[in-house]
Picture: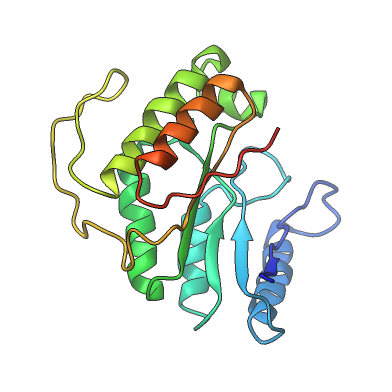
Length: 199
């Protein structure tokens, strides 16, 4: 059995300062490994006191320097809000820093307030997610082709691969039928990519 821990970083009531909230949750995260948890996970959220971790991979990189054995997972990096090549660079760097302990979770997102804050139309999110997910999966394997939303040419991304690629450590979530189809295709083409879909 694999048991993971996720700090909350929630301060919706304002009962404490954001700094005190972070100190409290980081202290709990420091206990995960000595208490025997197998992994530390964190979601991405923006613009409120609900789960105040806008940069999941930055938090996990911080925890990589404070731990030795726990795996470090994003639940999830919301791809429509990111340049997918930057996601690949950041997660690969996390994997190098942690000695191969990174688990990349990607998703489409669902918070209208968050999409509005980034100026992204909700009607574009499915296509954005599908294209960016395919780019991430492909970039972890090889060079990156051009695309519709992203003006990309074939480029090399050093460091070019995670430490133990293609170990099955990539996860994605989605609930719409179109996303499910594309995630299944990405899984089939990604040498062991595991894609659990939430319905």
